[in-house]
Image 1: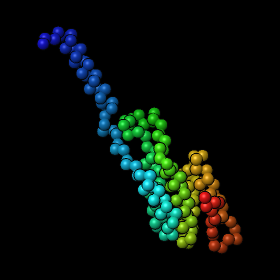
Image 2: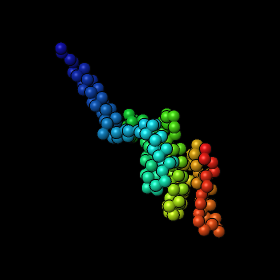
Image 3: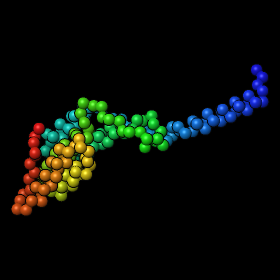
Image 4: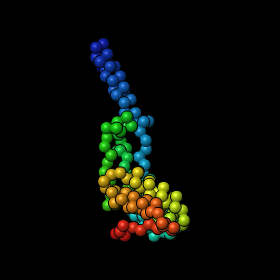
Length: 168
């Protein structure tokens, strides 16, 4: 097969454009998609958080649930990093809301910390809820945290106790 000089030049230019275009979508700029925990594992962790009286266990569960919530909020893994800012976060498509579980467990961690005499840690956890969940979906948890912060600072209470707004 004999190609003319013009055809060879055109083919060479097309190959160059193709190779240059592939560099825009370089796979080295992508990060591996974090593996999302299963709904059941998050639910079990949440139940363990709610039922445990051990401060360290509850704090660990709260941290793990927060990491799970963060994992569920990443952009699609097949999008190059350079285009992340143009992609909206995918909605949570589970039967539970990982961020709600994390917020609730953090409130439980604050109660457990307070019961163990760790008032400063409890207050830090409550402030973390207020600052970490500004979305309207989590208004209940933020309101609960603010009420408890006020109770901690109420004068004339020698032993600070925080009471839930509702257990349901």
